[in-house]
Amino acid sequence: MNEFFESISKSFTKTFITDDRWLQLLKGLGVTLEITFFATLIGIAVGFLIAIIRSTHDMTLGNKKCRKFSDYILKFLNFICNIYITVIRGTPAVIQLMIMYYVIFASSRNGIFSAILSFGLNSGAYVAEIVRSGIMSIDKGQSEASRSLGLNYTQTMIWVIIPQAIKNILPALGNEFIVLLKETSIAGYVALQDLTYVGNLIRSRTYEAFFPLIVVALIYLILVLILSALLKKLERRLRSNEH
Amino acid sequence: MKKLLSVILVGAILTTSSLMLSSCGTGGTDTGNSTASTTQETKKIATKDDLKGAKIGVQMGTTGDIYASDYEEEGSVIERFNKGADAVLALSQGKVDCVIIDNEPAKAFVEQNEGLKILEEPFEKEEYAVAIAKDNSELTTNFNKALAELKKDGTVQKIIDNYIGDDTKGKSPYTTPDGTDTSKGELHMATNAAFEPYEYKEGGEIVGIDAMIAQAVCDKMGYKLVIDDMDFDSIITAVTTGKADFGMAGMTVTDERKEAVNFTDSYTTATQVMIVKE
Image 1: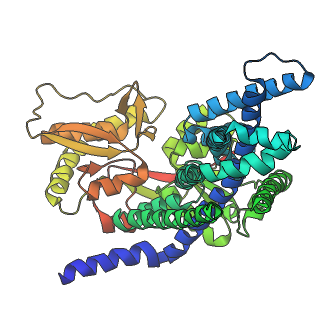
Image 2: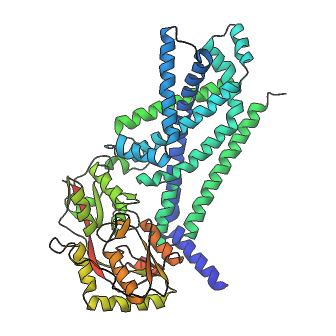
Image 3: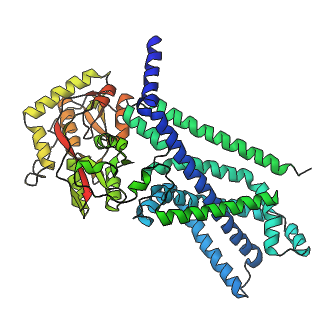
């Protein structure tokens, strides 16, 4: 029994204390959070933009013919957005990351920028579809009512449709952000020192699998728990006016 | 609530655009460590002393990685890739300043990529050996015995000559002798088949010096050889957890590795070299 604890404490020391490896893990956590945070922002910005273009197209043009010049622009933008969503959703994130790092930004020495952009654009495609489903879920009467009260299309979108849509899509959005957080674990493919990478690095030095893998898994789990708790709070807050 | 949401949205868009601007303008400052700014510039490397403060590409868990990591304290940034080939690709794109890797694979990489060269100054000589789990000393003994016989009758040298040396390449391939008995079952070998000429894929099959020596040893001992391809940094764990019987992947004997596994006698030597852009 004593021997068992001794070997556990020995491998614990090797995994965390030697060479300040806990510090490396902490740094890795920082990189993971950094990538996730900025990628989320890009994802939200891109996602909302595309969702608005796509749903505006669906609601105003649909299958109708283009009459004005602006109709043609909208149709074109919708076409571009469709291609973007198809390509991003149709290819694995690892491949997108490698393309971003080795092909698009081939001459850049800043891997973290390629990763943020790649994860952000990846997330954007999924956020776009989630937001679009939210916008489409709002009853047509809502926009008709607000138009008849004198709000124009943009005002209707910003003050009536999107606030209600966000409430509906929050669980799905939260889901997407959790997926994004965990997906950043592939950043090691382009030699970024994120949490998973540091775990692998420690494994490659100590030749022990248990502690590095379990601890990295636990850290991700804790991050996701915090994230879901925050989202739950936000959800409750948004529902507080429904009585 | 509406105001709050719009503020968040505007904030998000502003942050994103400013991030993009700053990253494009200065080559990015968001890596959060002070050495990043110095390594954004490419550094020309001619000797080992130039490694200080440079961006070094390696394959994770290799001896090159261990050597390079010593320079981390002196301000170098180590980029560890899953494959040596990825590190070399990053080098030819200027993402790293040099790559530290074993000399024979280095030759293979330089041959295939124009504009790269190997520096004259090598690191210390090191010994390649086979890793076997500590609780399997019987296999270590038998392996050593078979290896010694193969060294004696010249098989090992023939296999090495078949892959290294311009005059001898491809002239003495190893073939399993007829009537070899494989009744003892299978032996699993863990390797990373992206390390020419030691182990690499040719037409879907894993070949190379290590693969052939392993084949010869297994033939001698009466086992059937099964090769499992995996990441280099997983090989020793695969051996210690019993997923593979032995690990053979151009693996250098180091003290740290000796704590985890037993090594057989060495079957060849190699050195680490630096590859740089011409």
